[in-house]
Image (tube, rainbow, N blue to C red):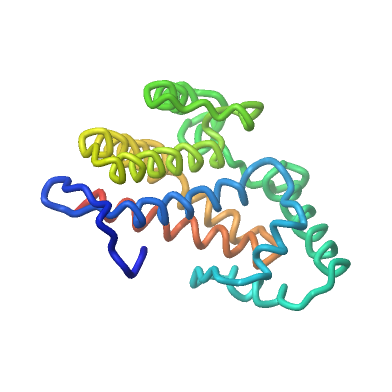
Length: 223
């Protein structure tokens, strides 16, 4: 959320939507998408966290505070710790991995690439979303779904700035529908597992942050 409103707003069902607010929400989705992708986080990512400026109200805050003032060698140590936690939890390199795929949580057989994957692909195509950089994973990977929401919110913000309210409302509606149909039902369980099995406050904080984001988004949908 932002404190200062700009003139870049669009009315939707009586509610003023601020372009900067949309971009801030998109930034949160994009940050979580990167943190939960199948690629290890580079040391530059940790360097940016160490620079400060991000407050999440989760275990991630304490982790970031511990990065301040670390040398390049110490940051590289932290990077290796995160890589190990990432591999153990999200890449299946353990006896109790945390699957990042929607279909595992939404099918009785707990199998990947089922209906949720097909429906996610259809939603992406309908909105012109082509996550080329990460299409090597199934379309219902948590990082791809979060990246899709970020894209829709950023594009809606651009439409607000361009004074194209109908286009902005279309993308906001698509994002709300996707959250309701593809995130609300399974991410709380995913977050519980990740928070419980992660060995670093980084991934525990990421789980807490995602849980809260989806809860806030679903609350807005209810309103």
